[in-house]
Length: 170
Image 1: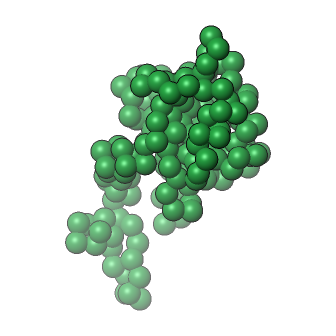
Image 2 (image 1 turned 90 degrees about the vertical axis):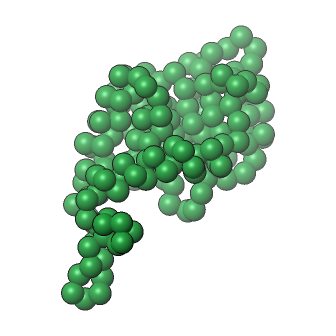
């Protein structure tokens, strides 16, 4: 990253991030094109003539019990109180089929609920809330996957509220 110009070497031999926004943009492209497809488990939709709004609260309650993180539109809605979600990305460690069964979901290529395998151990954000919400960097990247003005506006709110402060801390 130093050779690519994203890090700046300090006198003590430490590095600081230089060009934070360029690095964030590059990470989001890498997430969308390389990492997310490798982590993708499947897309699901509610069974029994239900729609996403019918199971939204069940997802929130089940997240703490089954230890998964809520991302995508639902995670962004919980973090910002701004968006009315129409879908969710669930970042799971394991047992996605058990979670799908508890939520009464069925596989669907066009499903509103996407299961993604968690990577590493720093995927959750710090929102001072009870809900298990994915890290703002993941929320931001997921919202930008869609070419939708409503989601892009929410991504900007997440950037302003959670990510902008991070670049001050690095």
